[in-house]
Image (cartoon, rainbow, N blue to C red; front, side, top):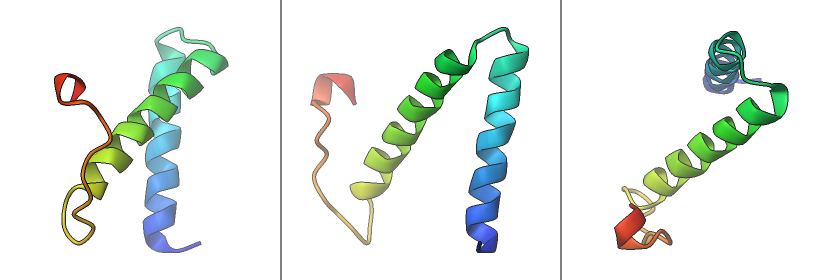
Length: 61
């Protein structure tokens, strides 16, 4: 695993720990992390070098 991938995995585990410590169940924090990853991927896609239009409606972006 590359250093960058290890950093991402570590960040995700850190978020899991925070959410779990705040009383969320496994299913709840998986849902929250999935949503955060979706938003991050959508944000990355419309920036260079990809420059793709966002699939998220303007009222929700």
